[in-house]
Amino acid sequence: MQAWHRPYVAAFRARFLLMLQYRAAALAGFATQCWWGAIKIMVYAAFYETAAAAAPLSLGDVITYTWLGQAFLALLPWVADPEVGLSIRTGGVGYDRLRPLDTYSYWYARTLGWIIARALPRAVLMLVAAGIVLPLVGLQEWAWQPPSGIEAALLFVPALLLMVMLAVAVLMLANIVVAASLNERGVNAVLTPLVIVLSGSLVPLDFFPDAVRPLLHVQPFAGLVDIPFRIYFADLRGTAALQGLALQAGWTLALIGLGRLAMAQMMRRLEMQGG
Amino acid sequence: MPQILVESLAKSYRVAERAPGVAGALGGLLRRRWREVKALVDVSFTLEAGELLSFIGPNGAGKSTTIKILSGILRPSSGRVEVGGLVPYEDRLRHVARIGVVFGQRSQLWWDLPVLDGFDLLADIYRIEPERYRRRRDELVALLRLEPLLAQPVRQLSLGQRMRAEFAAALLHDPAILFLDEPTIGLDAPSKLAVRDFVKRLNRERNVTVLLTTHDMHDVEALAERVIVIGQGRLLADSSLDRLRSGVFAERRLWVDFARDAPTLDMPGVAVRARTARSLELAFDPARIPAAKLIAAIAAEHAVDDIHVEEPAIEEVIARFYDLHDSSEA
Image (cartoon, rainbow over all chains, first blue to last red; front, side, top):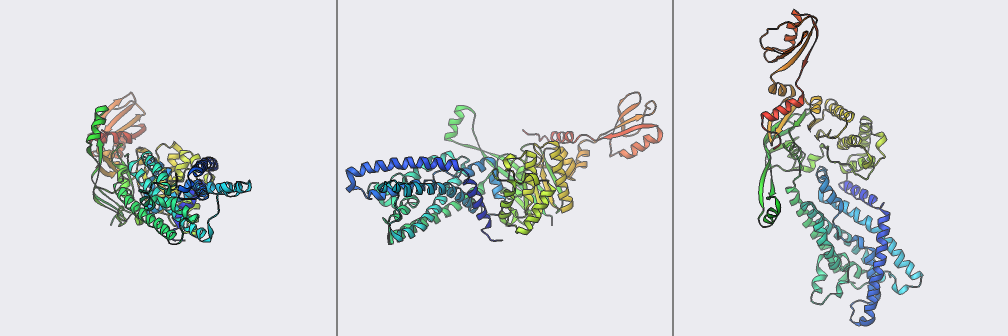
C-alpha cells in the first residue's frame, strides 16, 4: 500500500465521486447539448442540400461528429479547474505544498477526476438519446452511428483516452496561469474560444479554408475533437489514424512537460499574502 | 544539533506600487514602480526537539512568513534554514512528510466531504499503512472528541469543531514537529482552552516539537516556556515569558491588607503607591528585593490579613514591548 500512485488515485477518486453528485448540472448540460446538437444538425442538413458535393465529409459522418461532440463537450478544456481558482483565493495552495506529493501530478489527478465526472453522465445520456432513442423512433438517418468497423472502434479507445489526457494537460496550463495571475477570468476568456474553434468542436477542421487546414491539423487542440472523431468514423484510418494518435500523444507529453516547467517556475516565485 | 536551525533568515517581496487615483492608475500602465518589502531581516534562532516555542508580534511582523519558510512553502531570499537536518524548500517532499501544520485561518479538510472521508484521503496522501492509520485516527478521535462529527461534512461544523478536526488532520501522519499559525483565532473560550490543553499534552506526553504564532497572550501564558518576539521582520527578543516581563516592567505591585491601621513602611527598593486606612499598594523591583523576601519581611513585623502580588498583564507587557522597540504596525 506504499505504492507511489496511491495518493493520486485517491485524489482522483475523491474528486470524481464528489462531482458525480451534481445530477442537476448533468441533466441541464445534457438538455442544452441535445438542443444545440439538433440545431447544428439542421444547419448542416440545409448546407448539404445545396452544396453536398463541396463538403469534405458525408452528412452522416457530420451528424455522428456532431453527436459525439455534444456527448463529449464537457471533456473540452475550455475553463480552468474552478477548484484551483478557489484554492488560490482561500490559500489552499499552501496546504497543497505541504503534502508529500508532486504538486503537478496531484492537481492533474484532481482535474482529471473533475472533468471525467462532468463528462461521463452527459456522454451516457447522449449515447442513449442520439444512438438508441433516435433510431427507435424512426430517425435513423439523424442518429449517432456506431463506429465504422472493428478497426475504427478499437482505435477510438486510445484516441478517447488521449483526448482526455490532452484535455487535462491543457487545463493544467490554464490552472497554472490562474494560480500565477490569481484570477481565472482572463484565462477562461482566452481559452474558451480558442478551444472551441481550434479543436473542431464548432465545425470540423476540414471545413476550414485550404490555406490554414494543414496547420490546423497539426496544432495541439486538433487532438481534442477532430482526430478522435475522425478515427471513430474511419475518416482517419490505417497509417493516418496512427499518425493522429501519435500527434495526440506527442502534444500531451509536450504540454505536460511545459506545464511542469511552468509550475516549478511559479512555485519558486510563490508568495503568500498576509502576515 | 538542534532540530530547527535558522540563521540570518531574510525574505523580501517586491510589490507593485502606484499613486492613488486615475492618474496613478494610468501611470501604472506605462511604468510600474516596484517597492521592496522586507518581511524578514536577519532572523536567527534554534529549537531543540520537544521544545514549545511561541512566536508573537504585531500583525505583519513576519511570524507567518517564518512558519511558511520553515514548513517549505516559501523560499527565503537569503539565510540558512534546516529542520531535522533537511532544508525545507530544497527537500520539500521528505520534509513535509515529517511535519504537521495548522493554519488557523485556512482549512486543510475538504469542505464538501464528511470529516472521516477527509481523514481517509489524508491517509492515502501520506501513504499511511492502513493498520497504523486506524490506530492513530481512533486515538486522535478519542482525544479530540470527534466521534459525533465524523459523518458530518466539514462545511457544517462550527469553528471550534472544525479546529479540532484540523488538529487531527495535521497529526494523522504522526509528525515530529507541529507548526501552528494562530490556532486559536476566532475560537470561543472553551475551545481555546481545549486547544491549549491538547497542544500542551502533545508536547509534554508525545514530545512533539511545537512552534506556534499567536496574538492571544493567554495562549502564550498557558503554553510557552519560550517566546520569540518579532517586529517589522526583526527578532526583538528570544527568552522566557518571565524574563520578557521583568525586562519590560522592572516594577511589580504588592497589595497588603493589614489587621490594624496601615503602617508607614520604609524599606529600600519599595515605594508606596497608594494607601487607605488599612491597606497599602506597594511597588517594588524584584531584582532588588524578591517578592518572597518582601512578603516575609512585612509579615514578620505586622499583622497581615491578606496579601497578593500582581504581575503586569501580559497584554500590557507586550504592548509596552512593541512601543519600546517602536515596532507596532506602521
